[in-house]
Image (cartoon, rainbow, N blue to C red; front, side, top):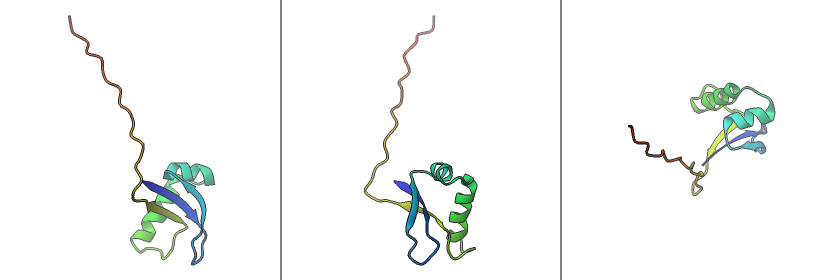
Length: 77
């Protein structure tokens, strides 16, 4: 499972806002989703030292599986 967070801009990086997806986080904080993705990417590739946006992988948690609807067998006449 992946969560997205906005953290404090200091050494502790305490979580301020937590969401299940980047679009949900963007909606909560009133920013564009591309701002979040950009901050995460720039930190990952070393373009900036620290970003206030974090993507965290949590092990041992499963995402809810979406149920698929089965198609009814329709015979062609």
